[in-house]
Picture 1: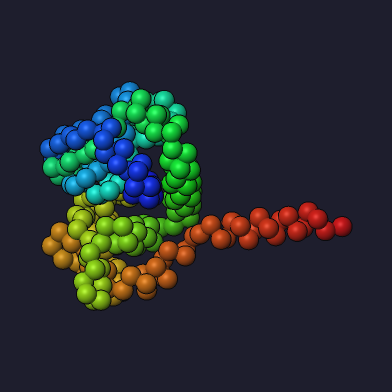
Picture 2 (picture 1 turned 45 degrees about the vertical axis):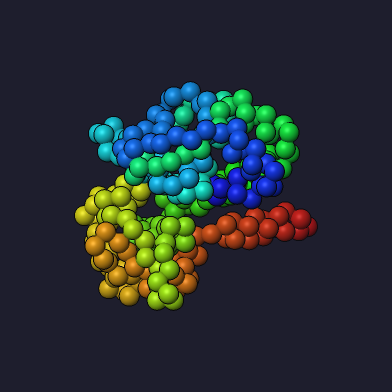
Amino acid sequence: MHDFIGKLSAELQAEFEQLSVSRRVVEGAAVYRKNDPSNEMYRLVDGAVRICNYSMDGSEIITGEFRSGDCFGEMGLIDELPRMSHAVASKDSSLRVLNKHHFHELCIRYPELSRELNRVLCSRVRFLHSLNEEAAGLNLHERLARVIQRLAISHGNSDDGQGTTIEISHEDLSKMLGASRQSVSKELKALEREGDIELRYGKIHVCNLDKLEQKYETAIGMEQLASVYELSREKQRSP
């Protein structure tokens, strides 16, 4: 949902590299802060950058983490509104930075960029809709399982057919789910007892990713909304 540069033509990618500049950000430093003006977009070359906000009591709430190849910051260049969250380096990171003028120049010269951006933004809207459904209809155990499944797909390392491992702390999972660390640890132990995961130091091993998806990813889905909508339309057409 985040790399819209990698799928573009070689010509456009080369021009992006030419127009963008390199920037290093040390661990813990901000790429930008909430309410900063939106003057740049970024592509992560290496490292990791998390998107977060803070509650009234100062607790960090992580909404996502970008990895190599991911692009971010482009929404503010499109709607020209200030940043709506903080982007902070989770480790020493290298970025390609494109300023607003060059971004709009590329959009005008290469229509494929706008088409790919539209596709990516639609994917994000679908994902956010799913998160909204989760918050309303699923308990912490189910939401945690779904987060682990998604992280395994996007951030996991395959263990030669023996499962998938992700590197994440209980603390970071709690920040992503808006729950206490103790509650998340309890549910992780429950998932381990069920045989879905194995807890390792600083890591979570997903024993069978397909099995985890079958158990939890279909708990709430877009297909349910589509079916209900189509049924209601049929009733409206009935005499």
